[in-house]
Structure formats: C-alpha cells, structure tokens
Image 1: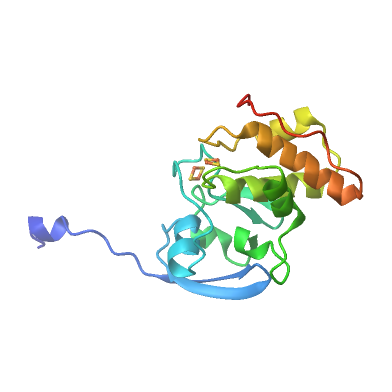
Image 2: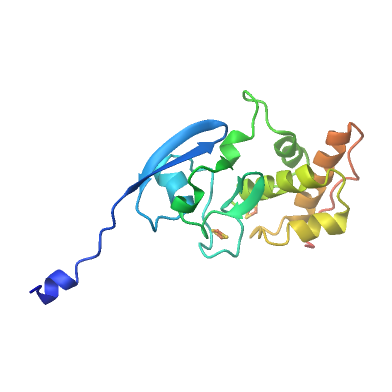
Length: 182
Ligand code: FES
Ligand code: FES
C-alpha cells in the first residue's frame, strides 16, 4: 500500500519521440505527452524565436505555421504536431536575406520592442499566401488575434500593405501615420 507522501509525488509521464519537419529540415526530440508545442520548440529544439506571452491562446505571440496555417503553439501539444510541416520565424529568411514580410516590417517600422513580431510576421505571411492583395479591413481582421502590447498597429498594417505591394512589384502604400490607432 502506498504512503501519502508517495501519492503526492508528481506523475512523470513517459517521454515520446516527436518527429517533425521544421523550416524544411527533419527534426526530432523527446517530450512528455502534455508538453506544449511552444515549449517543445523553445526548450527541446532551441527555436526561441517563437515567443510566449499569455500562454492561453489570447495574444498570438506564439504563432507558428503548421502546413501553412497559423496556429497558436501554446494551445497545442507537441505530440499533436507529429509529422507536421512547421514554419517558425527562424525559417523565413533565404540564406540570410530577410523574407519580404520581414523587410516590410523593417521598412515600415512594424515593430517596437519586437515581442509580438514573430507571431505578427508569420500571421502576415499566412494572410498574403492566401490573399496577396488584402484590403486594409481584411488585414486588420486577419491580424485581430495578434496583440501588440506596444500598440504599434498602424505600422504593422502599413508593413503588410508594403509586403503586399512588393509581392506585386509595385510601389508601396502610403506612409504610416504616427498614431496608435488599432
Ligand atoms: S502565448 Fe500563445 S496566444 Fe499568447
Ligand atoms: S512591438 Fe512590442 S509587443 Fe508588439
């Protein structure tokens, strides 16, 4: 018969090997079944570009792309991602050249502290992959699940317009205003 102190010991779950494709390369790591994908990426694979803010699905900072779709990695267990094709912010550049969305964020001041930026950039990439010519209302709607605590939404929206224009090979949109209107 077990003692009270034995019953109070935390249950250690067996670790499982998780194999995924991350940023085009096969990767694997060991994780308990309840380890979140965000923690798996950061702790097991060292991909700390995926940020954790709220850790309960509200802020969007932890967004990664799974099979091309934006997903909150704090709401998903790593085990659920087995076999998936994952893109993190570390996988956006092309041999050191920033992705056009990253270039646009740089050009249009789409970031301040940068904490929300990985999630914002990946969400913007997903938007432009699906809709290369989004209207401003469409941009704001698609980004509505990503919170910037620096409130730099005007610059972020201008960055998406810039990236969309660059994708069409035309001049960028009008310059960003300096207000913090969302
Ligand atoms: S950390 Fe995942 S949504 Fe905020
Ligand atoms: S730039 Fe600071 S949270 Fe968005």
